[in-house]
Image (cartoon, rainbow, N blue to C red; front, top):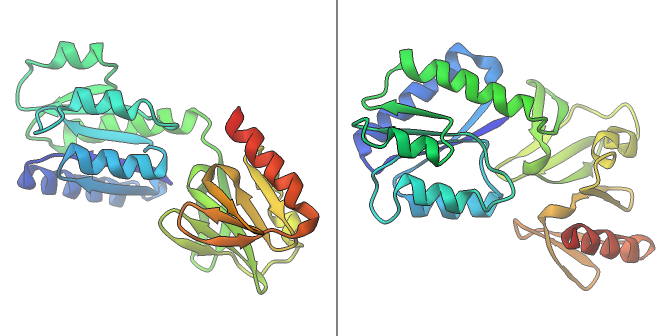
Length: 241
């Protein structure tokens, strides 16, 4: 799933952009988008900091508090930072936008003829950048879950439950062991198996309290004594790197 952050302080323009993004996803169902809309740069920045960044940014340039350029400088400090598409009512900022590393510059009002091809190229760049995803088979079909958005995986009865930043996703009934099902995650250095029932994304572990790992969403995951030292070492080493 590709995450998109859209920010425009003009309510009508923001609603128009959301409508265009809905139309885009309807015409390209394979794109699998998650769109978060914001009315101010501060709202977007706060949300981006909480999730480590977005895959694509659609930013108005002239906004109160922070303009699109200053907002971009702060966003680039986050672990994940994708292509930035700027838009404005005039061409006055086009040169400055490309100096700031813009992926593209669009004039308002936005329309599908100009926006959709830009989104096609931006999403292709994100996909070609090698974002790691985990494919889980659910009752409604295959789902692609970004490693960055996966907090932890849990064996819940006979299914694997993926606890993500914004949702929970249950697999179909497991036909293999939990460890085998989680093998693609464990092959990546950011994940660690805790006991027989949990695989944690170390990047979303914010602390250790007693015998529990504290996850960014407030969850507590028990750490068996058999793996406590190894987990603490792996977690510390990841953040030191």
